[in-house]
Length: 68
Image 1: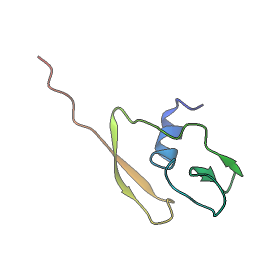
Image 2 (image 1 turned 135 degrees about the vertical axis):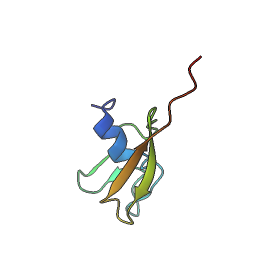
Image 3 (image 1 turned 90 degrees about the horizontal axis):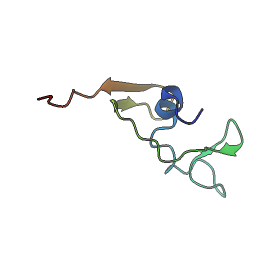
Image 4 (image 1 turned 45 degrees about the vertical axis):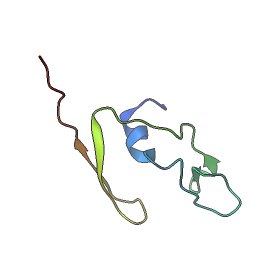
């Protein structure tokens, strides 16, 4: 589950956010638990926009590396 693209897109950069006083960074208030992988790496995508409450998240595809 932690390696799926949906998980990585949902929790990208969430591990450093404190959502509730007295809880560790990366605490999911809806699921009442700390997220499993706080350091998600998106290999082919980059964050383009995230709304204030993280309800809307838009990602763009990174350009291909130069292939020789």
